Length: 455
Ligand code: PHE
Image (spheres, rainbow, N blue to C red):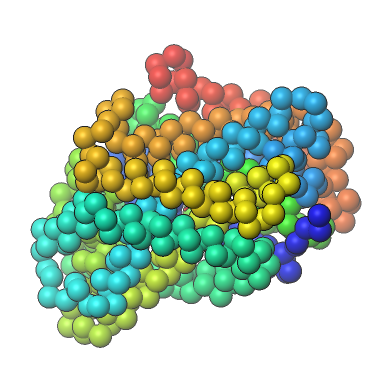
């Protein structure tokens, strides 16, 4: 089967960055930061990005581009007849789980875009008003499911159009717009009266709040935000051309992703402080950005309602796009796996994944309303999928990727791929192998075991 490629270098970077940047940065990062005590969590998070995220991202890129195949086949090609293919398969399952609940939140962003377009936040000033809008919507048995289905179908539509025309073209236009808009919002938010304590929350670490579960959450968030550990970037790299510099692309994606997450924090917390939200952990949950952000728009431009309107509409539309470029990448992992492994036409395998994700997604959507009492280990279906996928499945996937790249794979092959067969230099290579062998996998294991009190 002829495989498509990304048409340009910048297209490849933006598609990978598009996968990485999404609700993970703007919705999940502030929640985790808030729940885990602010600046100290951010420092642990950045350590995880450098020690775990970057080496694993390079390995995924290398495996994907070298084998030019879906994630399970990639391991079969590099390690025929061994159980390594299960690493790829674990990724396919994780992708399916994440897509199912991620699309629920993505659906909320569509509802909020509509509310913004119809100017429904006009005149609202108190936190209680914004909270009511969110709670009434999220606990409704119908609308969240409708938007979830809409969102998965939107993803489906892009997926069946193929890689270059669908994924690449959109990422190229919309990612830079998102970046600029977020920059403007940071400026608005930090200049609101009373914002200072929110800025301080982001900047002054309090290490007394760091414990084993903080570290696990920071690690999970790092994997989640960078789309690592489930073969997503491996699948995308299979569409990179031979000249793409993998190390440079890694650095670019990591910087863009981390900047956007931090900027999201600098929007939410100063604004929350300005609006007098007592930032207690029990206050902070999936609704965080849906309550604070509309408030930012109203307060920041209160005397100029046109600006409030324009900014909120643009923001939610771009959030939809950021979420879409991520759901596409999760969907692509499952679709390319099914179509290449079971020899299904691409359209058919996309349809199977779309249907499965909608079914599981509906249960997640209902867990904010009629099914909110259905709990396992004290978590709703939505929370359980989120916790398990990001704190366990992704890091475990990442641990095996590091072991595979560090111990199993032929070093020369790895080096050739990173240097594009000698045309770029890789002075970091020995350090990278050392980290992949002795640091990354053991750190991941220690953090997971530590969280269960086993270490
Ligand atoms: N990184 C994406 C985000 O930040 C989420 C994601 C996770 C995408 C895993 C693909 C795979 O929103």
